[in-house]
Amino acid sequence: MSEWMTKVLRLRRVRALEEDLTRERDEVMRQREEIDRLRAENRALLNSLLGTAGFPPIEFPAPPEPQSLPRLRRRSWHQVQAWREAEAARLRGGSLESEWPRESGGRVNPPPHPDAAGTSASATATDSPMRTNGPIPHS
Image (cartoon, rainbow, N blue to C red; front, side):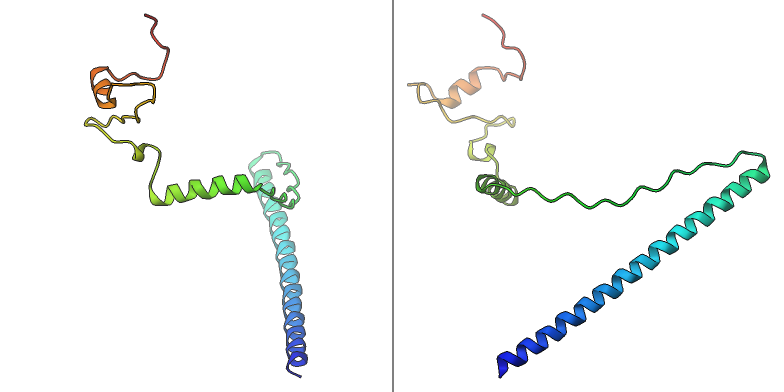
């Protein structure tokens, strides 16, 4: 019995929502017609004023027809995962630079390369001048 009452109440609610939607659509159509009428009246008044001042009337182009929005593309799982990771990094304020130790002067020292045996990253970073992006000088 309770399932039957639930279905009846749900059907009544859906019917009421559909009627509200229909009323709202009708109201939007009436408002659009009013807007079109007022625009036409404004064009006529403007051309009347221009004619009184001795200027030729202005030809107004037809307003563009409203177009439906394109359907959003579905994203693949790896695109969604990359977006989530980037969003999480943005929210916590992290970046790749935050994982590397900083020296004074705002320079970032990357982790040492595995082939660089015996040299420390801080010694090579402080001894060599900071290079900018651009062409590599030939030796």
